Image (cartoon, rainbow, N blue to C red; front, side, top):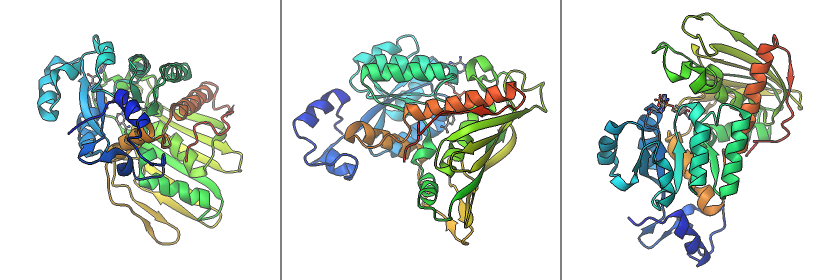
Length: 378
Ligand code: NAD
């Protein structure tokens, strides 16, 4: 298979390789396939932990427009196993120290940062400086300041940036957005969303270490509940108040365990979210003036399930969300299609997360949010 790199993509584009393709509205195959040549973007995964191993690498095999071209790992023993399994040449294998040399590797178009949260900003910025497009896992970073730094680095290097919000590429999410936009069940009055699981693992894991995670349940599963609260209503919230509950302080020594938060919106709707590392929850329910709809489960890798007050189910064939997500980003890079999870969305969610923590610190005091339409896409 012949692969085109981002660098010679520019050349192909300017020489008319893409013919009359209309950006974002023509099937990609028309623009990217000619004869036997197939355009695929090379992705390098940074951090080969469980998400890279069990979700992203298998998903890359299913993508139409990407392939696993390289790896960046701090664990020497993983190199040979990954190289053999995914046919990765030695020259495309990096560690955290020599990572910056990726700038000279034309096989790599996209660097996908899949490290503990506090390492996202450093590696995303280094990837941008190396001239690579960036996918940064969620949460985008551990502070709004870091989100700004990532966005500025990508802008300066003129590379594209996306956050690993797989749900934004999922057909169920599109259906929810459509119901809200078209008022299929009337005006949205109340949204209830939860994204949570019980953590029983090693108490020393990075997710329970604030220095590495930046926060507990809220920055892990909580970002999904923030997102569904927003697209369940169709606009950004104008204020938030929040509460934290701690029932296993001996285990959750450093990070938040269970958080509930209430949002208000300009259109009069109210949303309630729950996230936890000590309770299970995985649901979105949207109550409207003429009925309701829900996803249950709502935030997992799928299959997702939904039903409505009209008595019908919401059902789509199961596809890898991660494959859909990476293909969406490839279309954004190659065809100028919409970026479904831009940095601005990750930053917005971090502004909200910081406001939630501020509310908790201030005994549940309501925090105003001045977000406008920031981060709203689709
Ligand atoms: P993990 O613990 O399984 O893997 C973390 C990787 O980082 C490992 O390869 C580890 O060796 C490496 N690492 C480098 N420095 C480290 C350090 N100082 N401490 C600990 N590990 C270090 O974690 P994961 O589940 O793969 O999560 C990685 C990122 O992906 C996180 O940001 C997480 O939020 C995100 N994630 C997203 C989704 C999603 O649905 N979008 C799902 C899971 C994880």
